[in-house]
Image 1 (cartoon, helix red, strand yellow):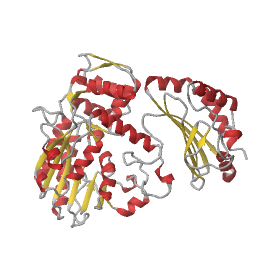
Image 2: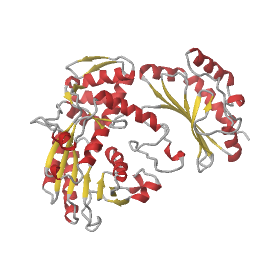
Image 3: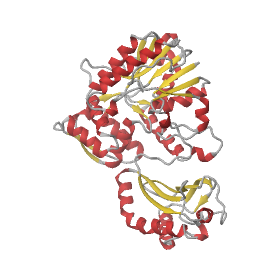
Image 4: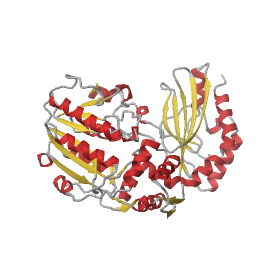
Length: 474
């Protein structure tokens, strides 16, 4: 089938796109700026990309007529605190105009669960968009979801930030609100499962996982799954505005998104039935399983790029370099830059790093760190390296594992296998301007991880600065 995917560069759209391609559908990606569509050249060759802004004036003949299915995945909640509902309504009306000029048979819309008579502005806007789409000249299928659990989703990242940064929390009353989380994997299964299914035409379905929790219970369950404890005290005096500031300063979310989320978190979002699960024969994953799957994906993304990231690399490329992506969220990093005069000589220096050759600066500090790691049950520096001047993906290199070694791309990426209260990467990359970027990235695990990072910052200043200076000497 020929499928129109609106919101193709959003969190859901980027997850959905590879699944549609895997099902052999012909996909048209509608985006406001095709330069922001983070897909690799191979994937771009498999899809048609059209620049289309549904907030702009209607322009006929932009879309092909022979569209069979269209996904409506457009929202403006994170762009405004005041008029996002007006923008969402305008987008839906314009979308209906565009669909008149096509042969579309079904439109699939991902919305939010609505249980309350008095809805938050966010959920009220989603319901209004639903009503507008029902007036379109097509069969509409609406999927209403609650909290979506998946790495990179705003809900999951907020929960992770809160739990990892704050072992003790004083929280507002909305943490006692009940919700029904659903794994992103299940959301995608529902979104693809309803394609062309006439039993789902002109109807709205709630989708959710098997668990109903308060937000407080979700925070506790997350901490438990990560192997640490957290303590939460609820107080009635925290206003929505103060709660929004709290989320904004503690987590990585924007204030605009935080204030809209807090407004919605006061409302219970629980699925009223399981009709769609029965129609499609889908058994959803528990919250615990969803967290485990999210972190499994995160770990896989250290080696293989995933569609859940904003900057997506092509997993379908043969070159393994295209699968590698260092995480960008919930991290701490040290980045050094230095101009390179002899690129080949510097690459040779990078490819000789570790083992008998050492780390170019403060080798005695590296040895102490390896010794401490050994005492703690880690691998230490005892493994060295197999070859003095050759590196291959998968090789052990002291207490690092080589994820990527591509001289043509001028990039070496290492992952730490030492005992750490978190996860660490070390990357060397020479860009097109002959600038060497040496980046140490650390994803801490809880407060202990952050304290560890800040405690070694003085050592980083000398070690990483000296390392890049000596590596670039030719």
